Every structure is written in C-alpha cells, then in structure tokens.
Length: 122
Image 1 (cartoon, rainbow, N blue to C red):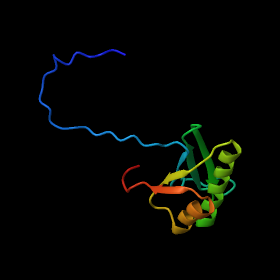
Image 2 (image 1 turned 45 degrees about the vertical axis):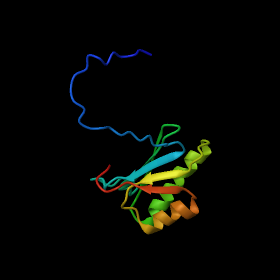
Image 3 (image 1 turned 180 degrees about the vertical axis):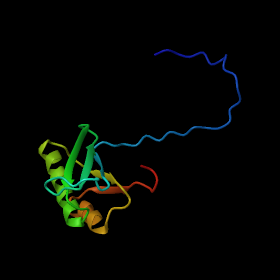
Image 4 (image 1 turned 120 degrees about the vertical axis):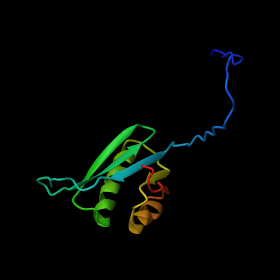
C-alpha cells in the first residue's frame, strides 16, 4: 500500500463524511415488477425478482397476479431454490408496499428478519 503525501493538499475542510458498512451476508432482496404490457400464453403478467447476496444469485419466478396467494407461492418457490443450493438466509430486504399477509409469511412462516426499504429509495 502506498502512503500519500498530504502536505500539498489545499482547501478548507467544509464537512465530514460518514460511512456506515452494512452487513448483507445471509440476506436476500426482492421486488415485484409492474404489470407487463402483454400476458404470456400461460397467463403470467408479473415476475418476482430475488437476489441472494452471498452466492450472487438472481432468481425470477412468474406470477399471474399480485394477490397474496400468488406472491406467497412465488416467494416459497424462490426460497426453495436457494435452500436446495445450500443458502442459509437470515434477513429479507424488500419493498415497503408489501401486504400484511406477506409480511406475516416472511417473519413467521419463513422465520426471516425483515427490513422494508423507505419510499423513494429503490
């Protein structure tokens, strides 16, 4: 590593920069797309996208609607894929527009910690 010579730097200190490192190990992120302009031949209009950080996996599951039953089915299918691949998950970060049924499923059925992304921070 090289040491920098800071004696030649000019300027006035105007503010401090704060850095916070987030531990994203054993964490998944997900989002649901908006409705596609065309329905597939099998009736699918939406997809759920899930990213698992440790393996750098990006998984997608199709959905016919954004109803809770359909979302939970897609979510479980994606989690099953990750678990079969040996991923151990602890936390899920997702959109703040998620339904109460989906929140309950993630926290109580799947036993994952959940964090909602604030509005406008996508």
